[in-house]
Structure formats: structure tokens, C-alpha cells
Length: 150
Image (cartoon, rainbow, N blue to C red; front, side, top):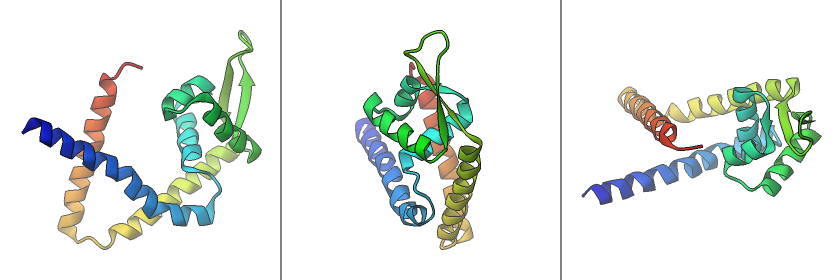
């Protein structure tokens, strides 16, 4: 019983991101050239300040060559900057620019507005259920992540 419950939860959680991505990707592509991975990087930099390329790779669970491509594109668009660590030139740190912060806020507003429009198809009871459920999922995921070793 417990194993099948865990399998069901895992399956449900694995479908959330693709469903959200599919729902929001078309309106996002029309308004910005930033990829979803680029958005994750910008959000991480906004939250944490300067991050090394290695930490960004861990944050996105991607190998460094993939992160380099994402960062290079964000640099080209003026969203982030590279900084070499003064104590160890092998370490490359990334920071978000003012343009990156401004555009990220705008993109987050666009995403929020798109989600709000999509949520209008639900009635008051369904909205309440989704509110409670989404908060529970967020809380449980944060708890699970707090137990992981970084």
C-alpha cells in the first residue's frame, strides 16, 4: 500500500512541471527569448546573489558545459556578468545585472498573469482546493529538500 502511494505521488509530481511548462511556454516565447533554464538561473541569482558556475550546475542539476551555454546566452543578452574569483582564477562567479533583475520581474509578472487567466476556469471551491493543495505540495517539497545533503 505504502509503495503504491509513493509511486502515485512520484508520478503526480513528475507531471506537474511538464504541464506547467506546456501551459506557459507559448505565451513566454512570444514575449522573451530567455529559456526556462535561463529563468531558473536568474531566479537563483536574484535569491542568492553571486553564484559560482559549479553551484549553478548543482542548482539546475546540469553539467558545467550545459551551464556554460546558458550563461553565455544570458551574458549576450545583458542579464548576467562573469567575475573571476580574486583568490582563485579558476573559479568563475556569476551575478545578475540590473537589466536581468528588471526583466526577470517583468517575466515573473507575465507568468503570474498567464496563470491567473488560466485559473479563472475554476470555481471558488476548486480554487480553494488548489490553493490548499499547492501550498501543501510546496511545503512538503521544501521539507524534503531541507533533508537533502548539498
